[in-house]
Image (cartoon, rainbow over all chains, first blue to last red):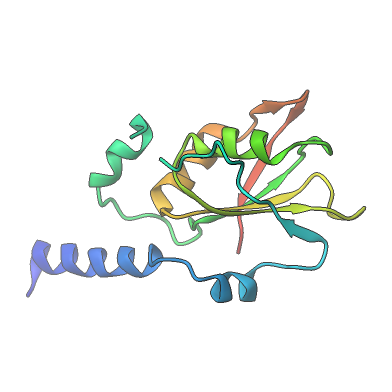
Length: 48
Length: 94
C-alpha cells in the first residue's frame, strides 16, 4: 500500500502504540516511587 | 466531552518528544489532590498523578494522561499557568 493510504495506516499504528492503555507495572518502571506518592483521585473526580 | 478533546480526530503526526507523562515544576507545596485533578483534569482523563513528598521533590509532580492529545493540550494551555502565585512549568517526561 503506497502513497497516502500507507502513510495514514502507519501513522495510525504509531499513534496506537503511543496511546496504548497504561499498566501500573509499566508506569512503575518509568516513574520514580522514591520521593513521590501516588495521589488518590478525589471522590468528586469524573474523567472526561 | 471537553472541547479540547474534540480535535482528536486530526491524526496529525505528533513530534517524538510529545508523550502522556508530564513533569510539572513550580507547584505550591501545599497543593491538594483536588486542585491538581481540577487543573489537569480539564484537558482529559488522568491515569495517575504522583506528587513530590520529600524536600528535594516538593513542588514537582508527574501527571499521566490516558490520551497523548490531551497531554499535549495540557502542555499547550497550562505552561505558565498561575497557581497560588507560582507559574507552572510543564515538560514532557523523557
